[in-house]
Length: 329
Image (tube, rainbow, N blue to C red; front, side, top):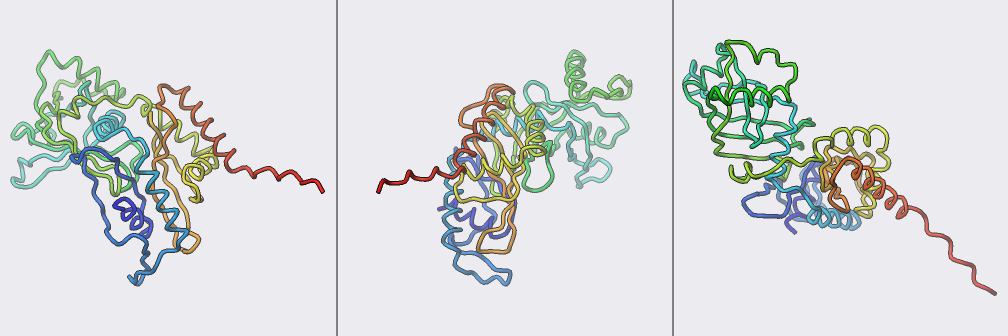
């Protein structure tokens, strides 16, 4: 009932939503709205009974999402940091304006443990801030980030200068993420790394937020399929959206959507941003759902095979049943 309440509220407000995975309570799920299931809200704020068919669809969707396999918060976080575009917002304790936070958009690259590596000019304000106080936070948005429904991670920790014997490895990791970073050889630039991560907070979208411990973050590995997931999503969205719409209808019977945009692909499934207008309403809705694969994916070829399987299964379920054989007189 908790998930149905959240879903009813999300759909009523026409919000893009991501559902929380079941799991340890430490990986908390935050509900943004709270109102009785089975009710809708008009623009004048007056509650009305929800159409029975709509309630049936929402119930089926909530149950499907509750059971849909997900990577889990530690892997989600580590994957987002690994495959981000390499830029984030760093907040430092301002040296020039004591008591105020200083914000900067900075380039970074994660090392093998997910620790962000930076190279900063000695003249930068954030460099001076970090030398005076290494405590800071780094807010990293997912590569496909377009709004509040998309993932972001906040890392809090201490950023310190690297030792001389660590610089070559840091340079290699940074250039792998930023191949055009010619400034890595400038003499007045310095290498830093967030060595001590003390807090990891994750928001995967509305109704999906929580935290992982620094130990869980360090032990997690990036999901390998997510590395080429954006290319698959782009191809499906550009050339095969009708197949995605059919897969959604097959996974949740009765849920008819007019648009289904794949936002991310991983080894266990896809997140899909759907648009629809319920039969008993003229208010369009957008929400994000989890569309799981029938089995875990290992490589790019396997993704193609599984999506073809899912497309064929969806087409078969949508095909009209053959007419019953005529009975003999």
